[in-house]
Image (tube, rainbow, N blue to C red; front, side, top):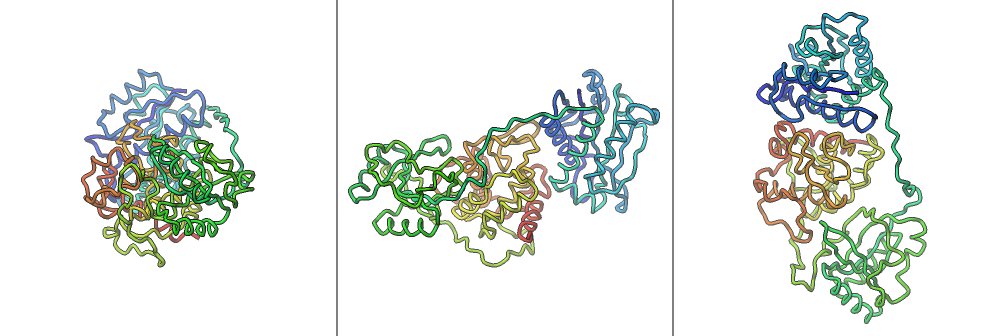
Length: 507
């Protein structure tokens, strides 16, 4: 099946305007989500779009392109406008088409499916003499997805999750009308969550140089402290962490951490990880054998790559101490919020500040919408604390950018890009990052660049590829990101804070 998607207006033609929105932005957002959803979920579908970015295109160009391509179906996405009391959804076929035409049949099916999900008043199925449904050779429908001039409808339009619902409704209708076959996905077997448990691993230093890590192992051995070397990747570079013990409770890990710090090792830290049940059988014990002869191998108690946290302390855990780099990064502002934050004035709500929500609260909130969402809360808490940024608001930003980590835009989940860094429009997918942690790190560094002109603390490597392109310190508040992080993005910061308030008040 060949689907021609036509997001209305664009470029020099903003379409209808109201409540701080332009029709051209909403139609493009919905159409891109339709394209991505139908290509992801259904077999034997080709999609061509009249535009994939904010470009100008005439009506004649759109209809001609669809005809030349010999599309099977033409779908135009629009937003309505009238007086402020008008609201709801309606769709149109050409007024020269009969009620028994293929276009009428498809319209009836799509109308029913969209109305199931769009939370709008039903204004019915209609006919009109619009160019794109008149001049196209295939069945064609134009949908009007709410009134931009109506406060209720416009508020929905600002929500990316609502845009996705509307897109899904269109896809459901197309699939039913054209008998599309759903793709059968073969998932790689995963370790059941029920068989994974949280463990707390104590490390004593992390180095770029393997030799330095081996020296630390030898030094610890002289003090009768057994250790081993575990490698990890950060921004594509290998680091060598010296591990001394893994525990099943944080209390025991913290106790061991304090002991090792008293012994003079100020670069010790804890990482919270997920491990299988078999791995954790001996997790409360330190290695019983000296590891000096096998320091380059991971110990048998090492956990999987599903690390859910960086160090629980603010010491320098990723600094090559013997390589001459700074071992005392600038301390981050305290993030010890105890009271419910109040956003009395969104324009004054700063990017810098405490993280109120726990990692569990963040993860639970997003999983109510997307049960398959990755558990990233710990990264946002820890890295937020280090940079002095509100980690839970940054988490809300990621929800906004990724549609609850469903990635219904041009960015793919495999990119670990949770904030659209480098996705500058159209089909430009943006930056990719080595792992989940690095993706969150890049987002926090990009926020730091906007929030202050101060140098970036050096405990973590710079992974944000666009850090130096930012007008440093130009956006100290979330709403100041409007038109900067997202273009035109006139309500970008407000949308993030609206999501954050939902997180704060969710049960």
